[in-house]
Image 1 (cartoon, rainbow, N blue to C red):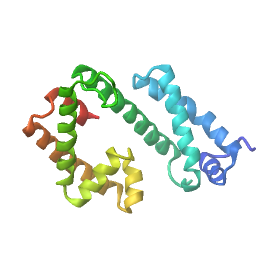
Image 2 (cartoon, rainbow, N blue to C red):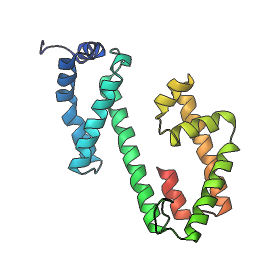
Image 3 (cartoon, rainbow, N blue to C red):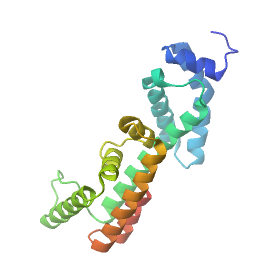
Image 4 (cartoon, rainbow, N blue to C red):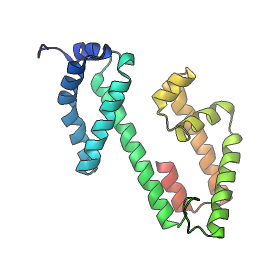
Length: 195
């Protein structure tokens, strides 16, 4: 392979499934993603895992890549999404530990915890069901199927800006309902809505 190929040319080759182009792009951008993850306070192992996840996604979506767009920006978006998902998972684990809320399939659940979990689940389902159709659809895809804004936009055939707008409005309404209901401790609510 010609070492003088530009990034758009490499992306064009990658679209056709060219493994050498993929390897070259990995060598060019992998260290940059790793360093960026480290600057965002991920440990070395987590940073390496994010790099692997990003490039796995690149390979899976290779046929849909657009060589006229910034490949660097695309990688950074994938990276941020992966970091977001990790941060959200960690925040949930901290919230569960701090407030002693456990998953239902654990053997040591008490009746009180089970009832609290069911109340939160029921309240959440009702609050989401009460949202306008567009907001309900977008919030469900985001949190049930863990899709990114780009993936939701593609699936629903709407713009990314519309998705983000719907997410913002839905999150604002849900936060207001949770706060007014006082079912969930305020500190836990902050963790859930930050991530």
